[in-house]
Image (cartoon, rainbow, N blue to C red; front, side):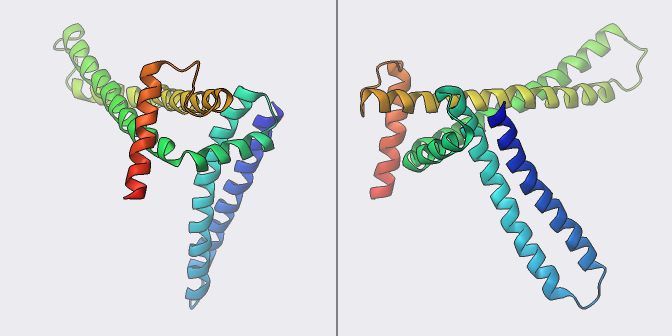
Amino acid sequence: LGSVALGSLILAIVKFIKWFLRYLAKQAQGTPGNRIMRCLIGCVMCLVQCFERCIEFLNKNAYIQVALTGKNFCISAMNAFRLIVTNVGRFSFLGIISGMLWFLGLVTIAGGTGVAGFYTTVAVYEGKVSAPWLIAVLMGLIGLMVGGVCMDVYRMAVDTTLQCFIADEELSGAGNSTHTPPALKGFLDKARFNNGKSGGG
């Protein structure tokens, strides 16, 4: 619980700084002839927002390390950062694949819920509902929210699987993952090979 609290505290501090800068930006907009200050605040806000994204990504991977190794948040964050730096190809490749599947799953869940809601409304309340498409849109939005939660769990599972594979590889020696299914090992080794080939070319 302490690791979760520490990670949340760091993220909360960064978010507080971001919203404070937004407040300063709104205050500066109301002051005439203050373009330099607005420009500076905008640049700092951009940097803070990038830093926030990095912290969110690192927090997620640090929590995975906490679950895998049982070490405290700071050590887990350092281990997660080292894993990301030394396996950039694997993380980026799986990030693209999981992002595409996340979007596809989200659209499928939302669209399927909306279509099912439309035809269910028409079948059950035939002639009683003047605009069944409104209900379909509402159900589609509910499906979008529920689908977002479900697909976020999927993305977390993908990242956790990758870190488990790397941990198995490090414990067993390079290229000798003893607990990894052959299909997954071949897929991730191919991702690393393609990344090294593109970097060398």
